[in-house]
Image 1 (tube, helix red, strand yellow):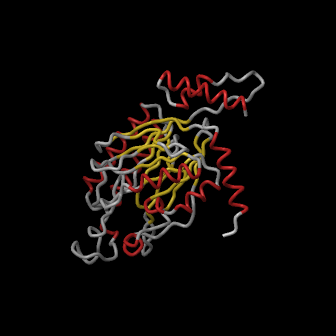
Image 2: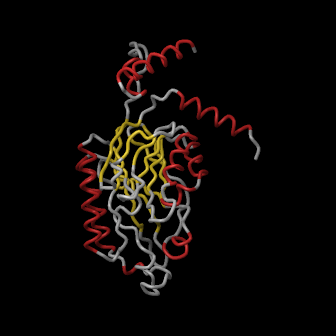
Image 3: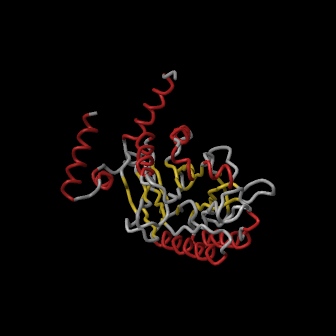
Length: 317
């Protein structure tokens, strides 16, 4: 313990002197491993995007514009050295309940999904998949997942590998009243992916308001959760960042929060395992990506997670 305290004192002193973050200072102060010590784990550079969200799935030109923007941001993420890039809910389209209503544009009713430009949507997704392989970057992108009629689509996150293949799909589980009543069918379970030795859970839409889903991912030994959320322009939408930061701190893991490009906020960013921002997109709301390293250098995290697990096991609710 004395050695740990001395190390932390030295790290804080260097950080105060150089202006480095605690993590950066730790890397410079901590002694290099000896030949018989296992090598330290390599950080994983990831990127999160805030992008334009369009709401008309019948608008072929709008879908193509969204797809083009997604691919431009993928290219920016790859140029920044990211191994994974993560997009908001609705990055290609966030279907409006009035646009698809079978009762017409002035009254909400069950969605008529035959109106959607599925061929264009599929083509845009195919182009994303091909580009992910060309750039060698993992890509997590939200889009409706079509199912045979009369089943409603899922609101889904597609996981595209760095080899250009769809390797996983997560379907939003905690649908809003509007989504459940008129638009989508709910998903059935969690989804995790492994990228370069790091494990991530996936969360979409209303999932961000349900802490039990994030506790579930902690039990699944994730290093972080990729949260895609369309703010919808509703009052109080900024609370999503407070919730996400709380989940990161309470579960001692990283959270990537992808939201739309919106001048009124919130902005997309990556939250560290103590609940602080590790990186953030421009607050002005322009479409952009930001990259940062996910790592396991925070010495508190494994102890905090182990303590919480042991405590939960002793508690009877």
